[in-house]
Image (tube, rainbow over all chains, first blue to last red; front, side):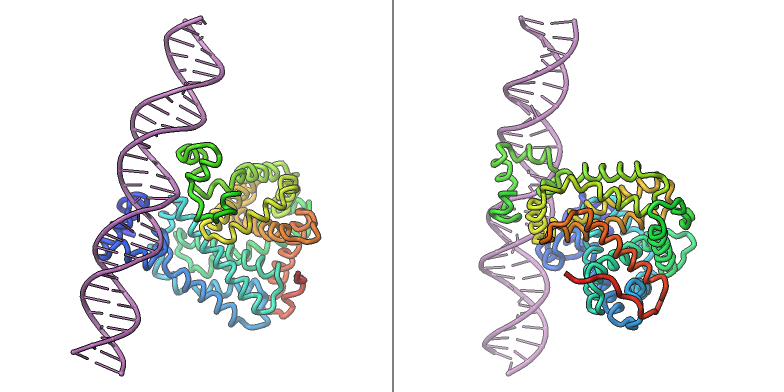
Length: 188
Length: 188
DNA sequence: CGACCCCATGTCAGCCGCTGACATGCCAGG
DNA sequence: CCTGGCATGTCAGCGGCTGACATGGGGTCG
């Protein structure tokens, strides 16, 4: 992170990273598949956490709610790390190659969630769609949590985003052409 | 495509691609940012199509319906290209690097859609969430269209996926813990 | 009609990411 | 004390990707 911050992502060579860590370039590549991966350490663990959360949800829980519930449960992982998350996001936002990786991790999360839902008996187009919605909610919530001046909880942001999503979907149900569309979504 | 099919993606060198096209490696890189990009030719055009579609939708149309409507309108682009699309998907499915790029294109599409929605006055968390839902629907629909033995229209698949999504979201609204959850989603 | 310019392409050299093959050294268990 | 395994290092090399400069062909303008 230090190096990436100092000289930018492109400006940093793997040899330098390795050196600063007191290692060889070769060793770096034994731990990380590539230069980007080092910024996504722990994504796998997070994914497992979510998957387990879904598996353990009470069987009466609705699929989408099970997903967002499990996502809320990751909150302790991020608390305390807001500052770090912020730095990381800015770095990623500045480099397409990093966005690719980020978005890929989210896709992988979505597919793991879909699998977990199937494990609960949810059928197929539904499982994937639900997973996708859950991830969308999380992504938005995370973004807003990162730069929320009022420092509200990640969970609150997740709940808010979820509510918004439900509203949008519901609006689309009633009218294929009703002017009642936009209603929630207060800015800022 | 031929080369990638013959010797795999990794096994193909840019020099070879360029040669087969009667060009220099250097020239290849003047047209494509990298080795992967050549498989995503036209993604930009598609994105524009969708954005325009949204902008032109009647103002009474609900956001989500405007999005899926615009997506349906891309159907002519894909018709006739099913075989090609299939090959492409298998190739992508086999290589993580290609999935990254694919998923990135979808993310970019989502963010363009969100912008288009904002242009219609949709507020912010709603715009992004709607865009994300639209892309999710499209992704699923596309997948199913590609290997639909009954050769149904892309539009049909989009409509089906959209219906399913609405059902899932609606189910989650009524009960935070109602056992009524799963209901749609017939397999196969 | 020739001078000129622009743009597409080619040439060349070089950096750096990433990999395979092999060597070395430390630590644990018998 | 030997031995086998595992983490790390060394080395050489491929190939993606880039910057700088050269070349040529087609169109424009004086």
